[in-house]
Image (tube, rainbow, N blue to C red; front, top):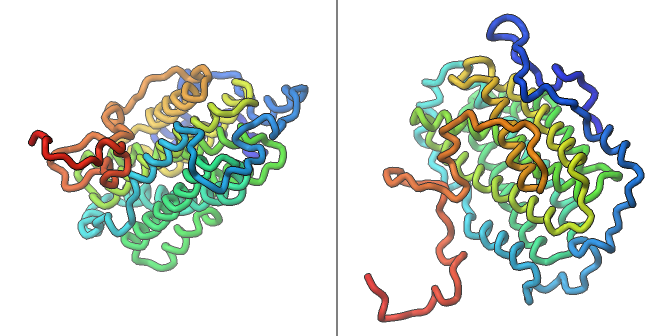
Length: 373
């Protein structure tokens, strides 16, 4: 694995624009940082990973038929994803262009950087699902989820591409944004980290599950938060509504990764888990100092770094580990953003809707004349 050959300050990418000198790192970053490779080498005496010990991964002759359901928790995750299906055509972008022209140059710069990363990232997630997870996992219920996730990630990628196509008139700039993995070093670094996990022949399935939980849970979180921040100003309704839908989906995908991890028999030890998460945090913090110039949309870069740490701690707890950073959520407005959705009665559409009847029980579908109205 690459991505850990940076000194501590290089990793975090401290913002030097605000005061003309390096900002002192927050206390939470004064850690004995050992990257994944170092931790991995220190644990070489562990028994090799044995697929035959893993019910999720060993050969399953019943994988071609859905019923009877064996993993009900995994199946419920699939049904929850199915109930949340949406398409890019459902997002109204008619008001966004006029708002776009009213934004400050640094605000447009931020949005374009974020969309450029997002446009490529969903394709990378799908690369992992198609090339690795869908082929490795032998449990039908999980394969159903992965198959549906692939379709949803395609919709995300289409949505981001459509947003770029709507906001950016210049064809050369559009090409630059669509090819961000090659044209933007800050985006390339995040993409390379994910791609290396996909191609790794030495990382176990459990380690790769954690890495992609970090991709969808950490690499996206700061950008989602910044777009929710824009929503407070009533700007870019198409962008912010699609952000609601996509952040909800990615939250579910991250939860599913944690669920799959809980079903593993041979889990990485907590030290290895923390090393993977820590590396993702540093890369994301570095990205946000480039994609988020100081005072760009009124968000403080140090607080954004703290928010990334808060999100990482929350993921670690879901994975059964102790927190690394032990920081509070610095963005109170994100406390009100639930993956379950909190309907604003005055909004025409919200990101909590689900397909009618998909999550209902059999008894919910019985016709009766005795119902109270």
